[in-house]
Image (cartoon, rainbow, N blue to C red; front, side, top):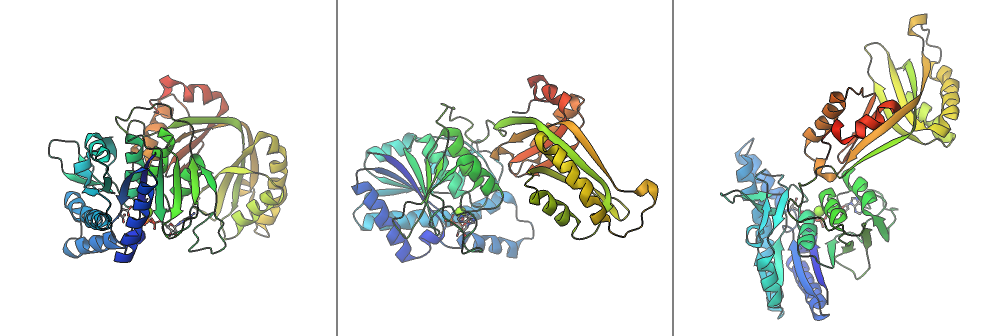
Amino acid sequence: MALIVQKYGGTSVGTVERIQAVAARVKKTVDAGNSVVVVVSAMGKTTDGLVKLASEVSSQPPTREMDMLLSTGEQVSIAVVSMALQAIGQPAISLTGAQVGILTEANHTRARILKIETDRMERHLKEGKVLVVAGFQGVSSLEDRDITTLGRGGSDTSAVALAAALRADFCEIYTDVPGILTTDPRLVPEAQLMAEITSDEMLELASLGAKVLHPRAVEIARNYGMPLVVRSSWTEDPGTWVTSPPPQGRPLEGLEIAQPVDGVEFDTDQAKVSMLRVPDRPGVAAKLFGEIAAHSLDVDLIIQSIHEGNNNDIAFTVTRNSLAQAESVANAILPVLVGDAAIAPPEQPDVLIEQSIAKISIAGAGMIGRPGVAAQMFQSLATAGINIQMISTSEVKVSCVIDATDCDSAIAPSAAPLR
Ligand code: ADP
Ligand code: ASP
Ligand code: MG
């Protein structure tokens, strides 16, 4: 017998028929001998409707009231899903985030989960009930116990956090697509379904906007080694498994905030090619990187700086063993980029090579919505007297190119409280 957390998104509980189909699937899982915790989102586009309602009464609604309003969508869902389960003879109980004991920061509309109290859930599970828990919401751990929400798409986060806190066997995310595809199947019908993806790969995909799984949910799954599967609510197909390294026995206190940054990585196998004063006009980057790609050279970071005149500097990094080839491609393409533009000598374009650079990166979904983390990285490097040559950021990663000789001091614990 397994303990399974099943999360159903908005579309999956969008109508009475769909709620009944969810209830039937849950009952089937219980009948097969499992304990089930169900996490649900608001029905259909309810949350969007509530956001619109707020905007009609206030141009800047107070975030505390916003949470009070938005959390109501999930409360409707838990009640009706629990009713539907009981109507087919399956004992169930609906629970809000507060009732479950999902304690969060008081940071309204984007709160992070601090801790989940599991006593009450364990009691009801022992009674043979299915728990129907409201996703996307919690309650602030402060004395006031105000309702908080976790940010849009946050029910995924609730589900995986509950699975981790309850030490469930796995967490199933039921949605309106067959699983995780190579890209959004609504935009690209040829997208391919993947049977499996690592949590690291999924984190990148999610942070680039693949909203099928929220990056914070992926991060929790990775940190706690929680097996996660994304499946269709309408079929029995196996879906896509998100695989994580084995659990490290990480404490459940400070569930989402203990570490805004999960890892510091460095890569000294890098070299930089800078193309100075290339013309600022459409097609230049396309031509340059088209040529680089034609030579199968793998470019990592790219930076383009803005000049006041009509030219730019473009710099990129490659692995050291492809530097010689990258340099010759850059030199060969330069006259093509410049074309017949007449340029006076001090303004002439040029190619510069730097052999000894290193890339240092911090990664973690805890950075989402926290610009302070990137700033802290820059400050740490500054404190260690390290000059940053290039910066590249995504929602879950910040990378800086520095001189290779600075790498040791950049990653030394004394350089920075990066974690
Ligand atoms: P739910 O309400 O179940 O949480 P979401 O709308 O949040 O569902 O997420 C599912 C949607 O994510 C799909 O309908 C699909 O359009 C979109 N999506 C974006 N990228 C991907 C991808 N790579 N694979 C699958 N679905 C994706
Ligand atoms: N109902 C919330 C939203 O629409 C949370 C969720 O669906 O995950 O953002
Ligand atoms: Mg979603």
